[in-house]
Image (cartoon, rainbow, N blue to C red; front, side):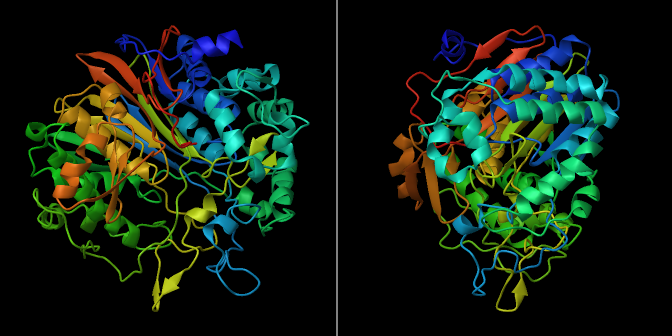
Length: 572
């Protein structure tokens, strides 16, 4: 208990520049798992996988092997990035009316989340395996040992986990209650030491037998039985859906911003393309001269966000199932035309999607993304970088668990209603299809051609704005990654912007309104992580709103807390 409070003490200390490998993650115990791999000569990929597995244990509300992942791997020898799409997939039995009730009417998002039908075929383990195959150095089984140790020997409940347990108590099944709740039904208090022996045994099986043991055989049969026999919204998943799942090597998506090369994840994620559009539309404005404390800079950021989100909502889906006009969306002439709609002294009366080259006729997406997910950034001693964002969607996913591990509700990221006025949504449900995501793991090359920054975030559709804000903060405002992450966010996916409550934006609201902005003040539940190269040395940043840390190869850690920070909406 004493150890826990020391670990999460409210401190503000400068971020040290580390000459060795660095891990930034949302929990210190997970970061420690990654640095343990680095000390043993493991690669950035090895450290990232070990960190992911540990987060599965200590941050069960956010992500894990019952969900999906997007991974970027930078190879310092070739200077190139490869990506892994480990997004969950719909069972082949799914139709575009997957989330319709017996009365023939679409379920509300809230009613669609609990139970089996929202569970997509998990992709995280397949993504890990593909990443390890091409970037790992240590044995597969070694990467699991810190997570197995945490699950078997136990860990202390953190304030963030306790907050999620209190907030989402009605959502979770008996398996979760047995681990994290007392006989009186109350969630484990902060500092309570909990163990998860069933999860330890599951991780040990996968470590020993390999990832196939999760996708075929008894484990696959158990997962299928869990979702198909769910009391609410039973699924129609088959063992064949699991056996046939593959993580995919997608083309990396890159663009330019002020001489920097920005590379991110392409579809089935919408995160990368939307970040690139926001930045390209801002490039004609002197964001550096305006500065981070100028309301006009944030107004421009909001307007560019609105345009990019509008295009994203209309056109982006799983490219294996729908035509996504990526070349048209990222065409510099098209983006210049979109940027011309933005004015420094006024706000657009209406925002509509544009018509990029190759764009099919679509209906605007109405999907709802819940603030969930976790992100991590790793660089190894050689300078290889791995950037990961992974998730189970909502806090505690579908509410269903298997062997102490939460199962996702990722399929509620699809559009529940597939068409309107005869036009189909790009993100409608289809058998085998991957739902659109906002996850945006991103790697930034400096003008010297070397990696300058790797950044990712959690928090539903705010992820896109968080990553774009972080890049603007580092490139235009010359902030450290830590300070860029810590800046408040003006989040504007539509007409009304949300100014993050308790940040520098509160004081700007009158000035923003004078520019025509419609602004509400509210918590946003943000959570970002980054590593960056500064003067030839690697350092990092972790979100002051989270329990995140930056830890070097030797286990030296900086706990990052904003003094007087108010509790934020959970971003798990």
